[in-house]
Image 1: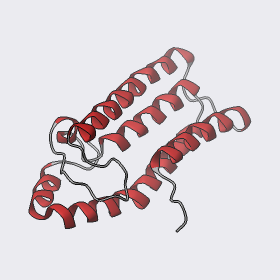
Image 2 (image 1 turned 90 degrees about the vertical axis):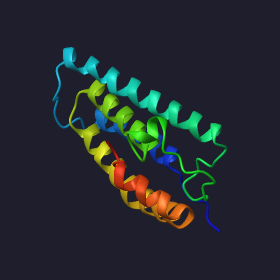
Image 3 (image 1 turned 135 degrees about the vertical axis):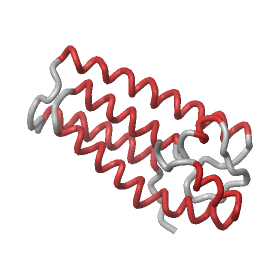
Length: 148
C-alpha cells in the first residue's frame, strides 16, 4: 500500500512553495511593509489553534491522523468554533506568512492548500465520523461550522 501524504506534508510544502514563489515569481507587492507585520497575528492564532487541538486529541486519547478512525468525537474547546481547528490553524499560518512576504503569489498557495484539504481530507474524515458517531456527529456538524 503506498504511503499517503498527510496534511503536515502539504503544509510544509506550501511554506516552501510560498518562499520560492516570493523569490522567483513575486507577481506584485500587495502589502506595504508596515502592513506586513500584521501577518504575525494570524500566525500566532494558527499556532494556538493547532496546539489547543493537539492537546484535545491527546486528552481524549483519540487519533489525530486523517485516515484513522477516531475513538472520541471532540466537540468542546476549539472544536466548538470549528470542526477543523487544525486545518484552520494551518491556513491561518499560511495567510500570515503570505502577509509577511507581502507579494501576491504566496496567496495562491494558500488557496491551493485550502482546496487540497477541502477535497482530499475533510470529506473522508467527515464520512468516517458520521459512520462512527452517527446522530452525535449529525448534531455536532449541524451546530458547528466547518471552518468558522
